[in-house]
Image 1: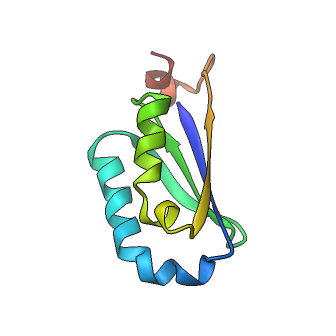
Image 2: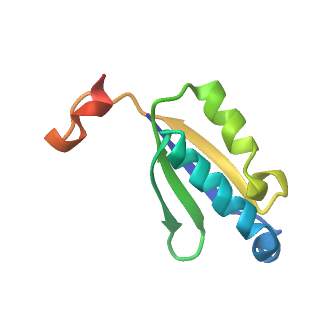
Length: 95
């Protein structure tokens, strides 16, 4: 599984211009079964994503397709987590 941190860059002011495309990109991530959770980094620092069911290279390609990343509204950091123990509700992440 992965965490993706999308931290605002100096072009943060352009976010509204690319928001619809960013929302469509998020929807595709959920529709494709890759995104588990998406939310805002507080206080107003950007966004965070929990992803699974993908490879690092595929996730990097997906993240690069985000209009916010492509237009340098955010910088992206991807961190891979190898789950070894979970709450019972998240056992599907162990496989």
